[in-house]
Image 1 (cartoon, rainbow, N blue to C red):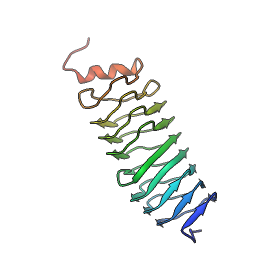
Image 2 (image 1 turned 90 degrees about the horizontal axis):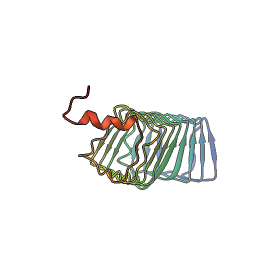
Image 3 (image 1 turned 30 degrees about the horizontal axis):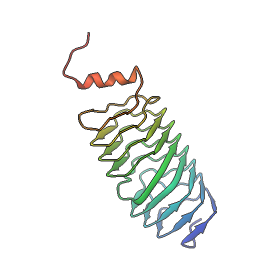
Length: 189
């Protein structure tokens, strides 16, 4: 199965396996159990779309737009979102988004929920009011981000250097917040 036209509205795609998507516009579409792993997604627009149980691992995203897009129970390993066009508005629920790169993106109010976010880089992003709800952030890096009013209360394994990020009114909880002590030149006995 492949995409025959370049404009889809309110369509449902089940078990599609596509390795190249070019200049296709998807509006209010649902993708279920689709395999776009290692696909080239170039100059596509996804508006109000939902991906459920899909695999986009190692997909190459070029000049594409993801506006009001939800990923649920999906595998998105090794993706660089930095070459996406704005608006960029994505939510992840119960996904594996390990080894991803978010660089110079506006991620305000973004929702990361019940997701594995291991070894992922957030660099120079606006994550103001972003919510990390029950996420595992092991080995993920946060460098030069606006994290004002972001919420990490139910997440774990984060290590965020307060000298490298703006953490005004950011929410954390114990015992995970003790990770900040590992960044200080002190000995704890």
